[in-house]
Image 1 (cartoon, rainbow, N blue to C red):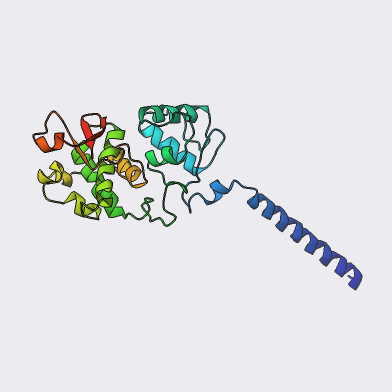
Image 2: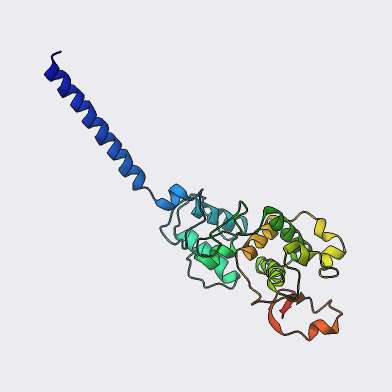
Length: 245
């Protein structure tokens, strides 16, 4: 092979390599960004009809587990997913638009870029640790396992509202184990293993969902014996619990 032919062959090979690399680059850069990165970052702010990816699969999985969704877990936000999200929203006091925005994601226990801290832990609940999640889930299970999912989130929200209040300890464990604060601690139910619903409720409360409108107390009016608790201002009643400030 003479020198000119050799140089032409070499140039052709180089051109083919460049074209192939460019095609691969276009294919990767053109891929849905959420789908490509969703295992590394929290969910984006909104999911709706036409959205795809593993976060959508997560939404479908949770809704199916809770009995709202009967379709396949395919990661495609189609009409069945929209209907299931609307059903979930109606049952949990959210705007029933079928769109999984920050509030709906938070209610499902899914961190979003708009509903969570930019610095998250492996628990997906911002500044809270996996131990915090487990402890709060046990408290919710002991106090509210017979309540609706919203009622369970509400109990978790009261704990977190107390953490924020200057009148209570500033940690989840401090609030929960404050003497005589919760019946589940006094009677040992705090040591029971929580179910999936209570664990998801703990995460939802940690992600910012507060169905109680800022309550720092709750009680069952059928069983409460303290006259003082009846004097507190009611914010909302959910299931068997009255929430108050």
